Length: 260
Length: 337
Image 1 (tube, helix red, strand yellow):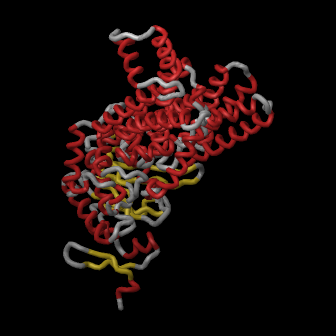
Image 2: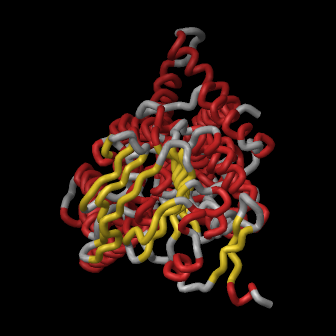
Image 3: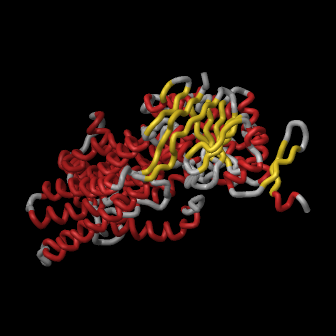
């Protein structure tokens, strides 16, 4: 049985259909990348999977359980969310932010305990950002901010990580480091779903790719099988060659620059 | 320094400032007289002339203490609701008046002064319209689906403007010899309005409101990360936000009930507190309550002692708040862009 199963999922705002009959499965411990042009419905799909939006039709199941039947709080114990890089208005310390990961496991009126603090420190340790613990979130770099949010997701203790363009807005080096972190987490057993604008990222770290165009799944499968020049042209209208670097790695090169 | 030690220091500062303020006033009563009296009253030790005893008792318990208590409650309430609004609306530049509570309460008080002779009615109308203004803001946001931050702020602008216009109508029709000066004075805010009974009545709900907001402060941190992240942490965002809006509205409407409009406290105290204890709302909210209380007691001392006539405290807080804000604007907007 697939770990996450999306079947017949449709959603829209007022009369406009955004997603139409989406179906796919995700196995435990896999990294799945959602690719698609701007406005294709990637973010909407992510918001549905996080339970922020209720589907019109169809459902999302985790371990066979329809997520519309469980509370936001219970869902937060199964799924952690890593948004696109952002700043806060207030200079909370990184520890303050990572501590928030304990909220889904607290009672209504809560106070963080020693154990929560310990979980927060362990999560930072796992991502090698312990040295940032007391630094204000507003004053660290974009890459560090993204790791802080990721540490909060780990502190949440959920086994599924949903990331909305996690590498978006990061510089080249930080993008690569983040991909490394994501692939390490998947090896530890986390199931990762990320949306992305880079087919290369899917080629390098993903186990599965879902291509979305105009609100429908245009194609899904293993990256090596479906990331090809025809599909990328259909998806983005861009002419790109897929170049085999060695036995393990492929990359994308725009055709305009391939034959110079 | 440990945050809890800092809070205890702040609490001691509030107590000391209040005790010193008990001795300050037009009629000179020294700290030694006050302490003699308090020891005699509560422990039955020492002696005092009966006439002096009665006089000091009356002065302290009926005049000065209610006023200090009012200053503490008002300072704490405005600062706490300011801090929770700033975090909740993810903007360090908002004040408790954001959703129209002060505009509504001003209109309510003016309405009461025109159409009723009873002071109690003035207070009741003031409280009720403070709430009505906020309910209108929230309803406007709800009509347009949900209570997203932006819609709430726009609702607040509309509701605030509505009650400001209605207040103008009341001022226009008010009798210019008696009612209009009374309304104007109310809008300047003064602790001389505060009578012992009104203060004691609002003290319990205000204290309860402040404690409840403090207990919810862990959520306030998460809310300031944006609705999506807070929801992904399993927080019922809309419910918590409505509870916080309700509590903040209640405590700030009650400040208007006892002392009219006192501006700028809810905006600047959270900034001062953030400089002292940092932005974490679990510490910031109680620190705001204590610093706000100390601040208003001191400002009230200044307002009633600086000149022969008492200056309305709303004027003093604005005169202190505005230059402070202009000076710290750079720090205040840090991290906002």
